[in-house]
Length: 550
Image (cartoon, helix red, strand yellow):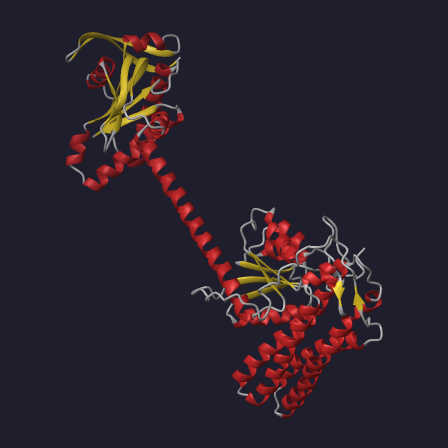
């Protein structure tokens, strides 16, 4: 059991008690009970001490910026002294409770208590001077932040001056000798890591700040607003997930230790949701040990910034994360555009080729020629169209031709026939190619009847008297692709020639079929014999008219 209530991470799947991070005062009853092996307690104690230091340093930095903006430079020297004293406090606590000392359980609190008094007094005294000066100078905008600094400093003072604070705690190492000390985090103020330049064009980003401590949240939000970002706040993980469902964000700054739902649980929930999985997350915490960093990164965090954070480093980390998201968004937009262009290409290809043939081309086939033993070919031709075209404008002619052929396209698609091409006012389709089917003749005849109905409806709409001739023949064909640039799928063979001749020698408004097609239609369609007709380059053949369905 963690002796510092409110500072531990919640167990997986459970809720933590309300209350947020532990205050220094809440640790007094349990600090005296530390025993060898209480490394987690000491680590959390170190975290709790760094929280007010984060507030002292953070508010002081913002006040220094504000005084320059308000031209209240008479307060600047005292604020710099507060900032210096805050940095000294941070260094003392960081060194006295360094991770390797927590690991070895060898901590001398008496030395820490002695050394911390001068800089802590400096913070309190200089803050009082600034409060008086701000009140005298009529600068009410500065008073609120100065009071927050004073409160944070008094919290630390009350803890270290309390009689409950242990005089000395030297714990023996409980692990095997030779355990290497944990490395010092270079991101702490005073570290040697170089700041990354701010990326251009990344202001105005939508940031979600998730922090349970009101002062920490206020300080962070105000600093981010100064950078030009749009800020939304959440006091815990549950509220953060609700905000994420309600609106889009570019980046989440997520505290590690929170009530109800801690940072790790919130991060895991985000990564399990496809809508927020790729949203960059920067973890913020006073837990600056390597283990906490690894936990966050393993859970999917993009970065980790310890408190008190260096404003330049925080700004650089935010810029880097936003740049990363910008590049990913750009990549996703490019992929979406690529997918859209691919879909367009696919549709264009399917307008030229049957799907089965297009799939074969995409799989690498270069020469596609198929011999189809049994298929039905149909030609439809508009009667007297050339005369109509010469007496009408090109726009009207093409518009009407497009309207009637589009209705033929719908009929062909509905019956799963393959449109081969249009040549002027002639329309060609086939059944049983490239995919074999047994009812190819019946479907072509039925489509022909529907085309006659479509032309009648077309004439009624446009007050015209167009007529079509239709010729149908059944037999073997050769099908394949012609050309390498503007290629097309086409048919060859006597079956195609006879179907074309049957159409050319047919009667307007009638469907003329060959004897081979008639045999497949008998018993299902009303047929009428035309007798022998002489076809060019073919000779005499028996022809029949399709009058309708039986």
